Length: 110
Image 1 (tube, one colour):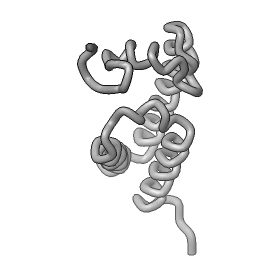
Image 2 (cartoon, rainbow, N blue to C red):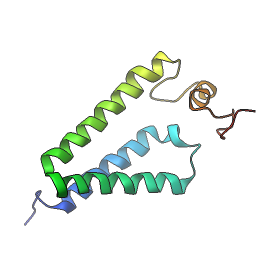
Image 3 (spheres, helix red, strand yellow):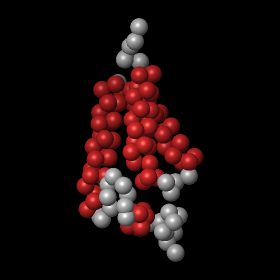
């Protein structure tokens, strides 16, 4: 009845991980417009499912693991090293400064 060797399982897995990521780390992208966040999610789904279709599911899971490692490195090591809490994105001014944004989260410092 239920099968995990379908592309729909891959889509469900990726969308679940994206949803958890948005819930946990959404404050890091509050400065981005919603359409850009939506496009990023669609590109992520297409990338993972496309990798599964072209190269096999092992490679798509390896890509998911590599993205997870990158997430841990950025939020657990790089951001704290630069004075930003990797879980809360505080202090917000320092986080925006690292991204090259002004104090309200817009492009171009003023």
